[in-house]
Image 1 (cartoon, one colour):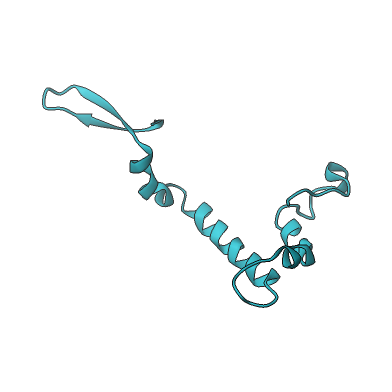
Image 2 (cartoon, one colour):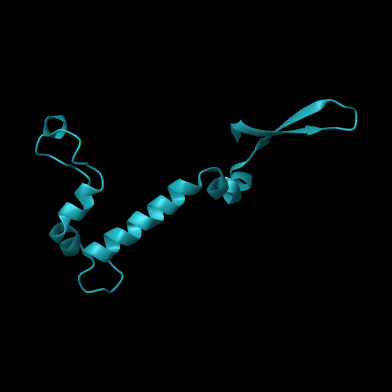
Length: 93
């Protein structure tokens, strides 16, 4: 149950009844609440596959991921962040 997102129904006696949304009710509307997040994640997943999938089989092997580490790390650690924040260690894997 999600108490933050609720809907209020007015009964026939003019009193307000608070009904909480369940996870099943929330699932179909999440894309409307946060439309950018889902499309952004899908875009970057496709981008990572395109950049790292050498044999274009639609699957990433460990060798392909390790061979293209810069692609995965550059999507998380931006140039604007100073090296002193992370040192030389990036642990996305």
